[in-house]
Length: 337
Image (cartoon, rainbow, N blue to C red; front, side, top):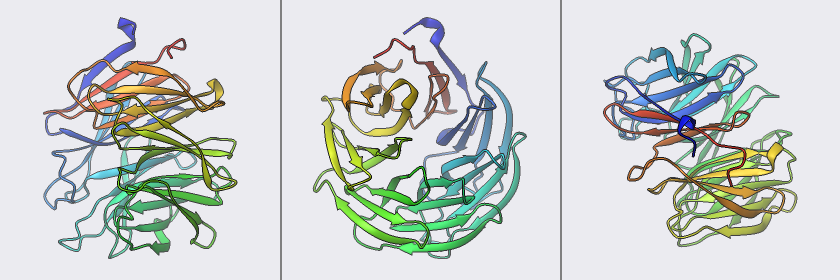
């Protein structure tokens, strides 16, 4: 990898754990959500930070400190139409503190509003953006899916699938916004019709092995691709028409704990981040669903806590938790496998 293709920035003291990152390709910005530690539950005396970083030169341009208790920011989306960030918090079931949605205006990083997702909703772990209906759909580690109107910050629907191991760790939405596909850590994919919030199908692909940790959808609407947290990890191509697996790739030994997937349809490539140290970027040819190769990431003994990708600029961002955390920028060359 070329020397000038790799850059690093160190965050400020107290910004030790990166919990979510969002790329705004239009404005060439990276938004980094941080916490003092990687403790899962919301802490009443701790404050999450949101750091704005200009991607052209990796310079910090802003920092928003949220009110105490609004932490950690576990997953997020960018709504370009309203120029806003929406983050979900974990909450704390032990203190009956529900998960919340935090709205932040961009550019400028201004806190606009925070709202609960429901008294018994905890552990936000996945989110979908429905731009057509100005809605977000939040999946939790406790088997809930919550429909949330972004315009007025209100819950409009909730679906509880309280069965064992229904932890919704990742999700995708079809291009028409008709169905959401929520995948679990135990190896299930549940298809939900979003118009009436009803489950229409359930597919079990794995048993007694680590299930799904990331997903990406083809803009054609034909397939979705789900990555697992196993060792080695697996990638499943799911036909959305038949709701069945149309191929499974088992990765090589050492390519484990898939953390994120990114679709570059224009260049016929799908990227998956293998977070197991040493971390790697796995490349899959979209048209044939065959492995192309691997791009080693430029660090050895540390696992990235979070990643994000600017697809148009072929740039990957990955966070390394530390005191304070570091954000790394890697340009992925066009000729890379």
